[in-house]
Amino acid sequence: MRPFLVALLASVFLVACSKPKPPTITPHSVEVKSVSPTALVLHAQFDVHNPNGFPLVVRKVSGKLTVANNVDMGSTSVPSGVSIPANGTQRVASDLDVSWQNLSQLLPYALSGKPVPYSFDGHAAVGGKSLDIEVPFSIKGNLTSAQLLSAGLNGLPKLPGLAP
Image (cartoon, rainbow, N blue to C red):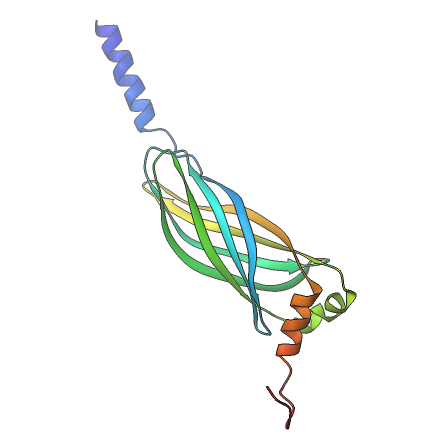
């Protein structure tokens, strides 16, 4: 009986002292919510899986937007606060509002008439008992030339005498 008790206590001790495992993020969906002369807003949904025996919280989502041939268009960081249950998965939705650094760089792509590929490369700050980690993810999609033209045209100053 004593060897069994020792083995049981040893296994409980090992489990209690095991190193926390990093969560994983799987992009579920992304849509272009709006394109304006000042920003692009992506509505993104992620599935966050927590393999640990304690809950975690997604504190913030951050990242950088690039278009076409790695043209840097801007960065964002938004708070979250979504709780991920122990040994569970939770869908997290974020509106990623990326302020354009240089909208004029998009002009050649807007005039091409072709979809413009983008990539949002980011990370989620996730934390909880014994764990504080940045989990990377990447979202890819396309902007239409019509969206880009609209953003550019809406940013032009209004000409006197023309209706709004």
